[in-house]
Image (cartoon, rainbow, N blue to C red; front, side, top):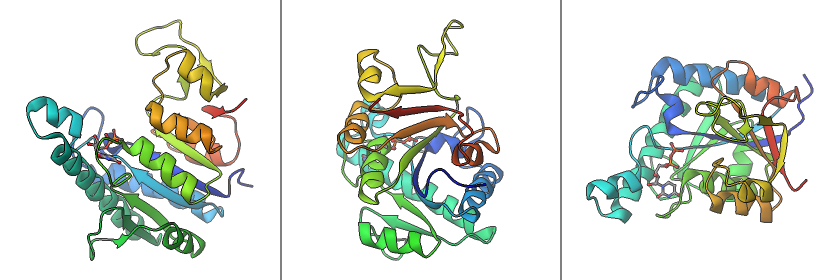
Length: 238
Ligand code: UDP
């Protein structure tokens, strides 16, 4: 396989580590992801990862229950650290060197994130898992991954989801929905498509980071994206 991307930022939702409809972290599922990630590292791709925390806690949902918003967001950011440690452990268990960096200082759990530390580890062949999103409340890990993808100079942000790309409408609710192979950032906005939050989409647009949305739940899809098999939807300026 000749990879079409050299350095990627892979965004995984927290829920992807739980089994269908569940919460928490499923060990077998996490190891399954680790194998898929190792496969592309072995093919020569540098892999940086941002993982969400929605399987454990989301600040907005917490605030709706009565938690103070900033504390809720901090709880959400800590949830991303738990997920990052789980994925790091799974990668190491199959022989793939990996490292967790944290946007909020918490040595010895992880080294404090910096662009240069991340790139150095990527160049050493490690999978770099960048936790705590942006490190600030009122953001999401989608925005965190746009930011980190831009900072580490990734070729693309791969957004692993449960659907196989971007549709004209929610395919689970509208059977007439059709999938885009390519779409522009502006079209996402104009059509009001819920791909990821607007802050993240605009950051990608303004800094020229393409987004490739695909179904990460199908084993082998990550390799297919990297091999340029044309699955999923690519978001770019044209
Ligand atoms: N969060 C935050 N700042 C960030 C990233 C995340 O405050 O830069 C908090 C926020 O409360 C969010 C939670 O962490 O709800 C978990 O992240 P997210 O909802 O993006 O996770 P996902 O939906 O991808 O699992």
